[in-house]
Image 1 (tube, rainbow, N blue to C red):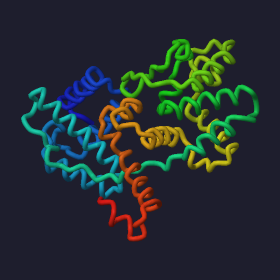
Image 2: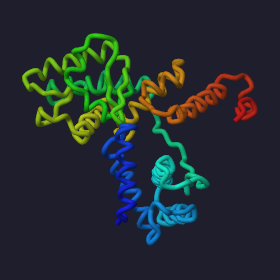
Image 3: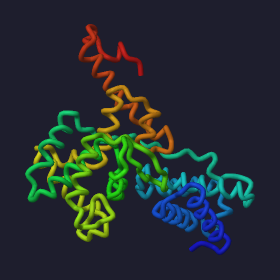
Image 4: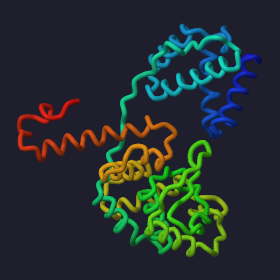
Length: 307
């Protein structure tokens, strides 16, 4: 339970996140929960009066409780943003999180599908479903996911009118309400056009309508479609997900010469640091290329490629 003074400052912080950073409702709710959890840890010390030792003991408590490093890092990030906000508002003069190091997170990316597997998924996985519409929906969804790198939430939020704008670009509303333009391939546009034409009698505002045409397809509904596509293509369903398709999009672009800054814009990452995780993928591929093709590779790749 937050004290009245703390509640006022937390509310102002959350309003700032919405107004200045375009933070989504779920993000603000998560931050509010994180701050309330830390306040409970600090009691009877007020949230706004917490000291560095309180943050340190809180992180230690999270570690003992077995909380994932990524979650603990997110909570520390929330606290940092909150106390820096208090400093800007002259509520306090110091930041108790300043000397705290975030838990180390092992970078983990799913294994991407290779280009042959993507082609198999698009050509074989989108045919022979229980009805013609399911084939059309499958083709449109997979074409869009793989050729644009959209998040699943962005895909399912696309309006039916998105294909009415004739041109090479697709307007996407991403995290925090940020908009970006991504190139739209001819095959993806044709697949989306076919779906809109097929669904014209539904009068749905969504490109991918749900059972109720006035609502978009749910994530659970889409997962069922993707599962059926993976099985038809003869691929392991555990390796096929919206995030894997987004990761495959990024990996294949890098393999064909795209630079990180362009990839950042296409993926809608606010920070280039988020995109730089893909350099690990390219480093591993370079090592494999040296190992496979260099005449002295038998001496060991480590002798030829420095970490």
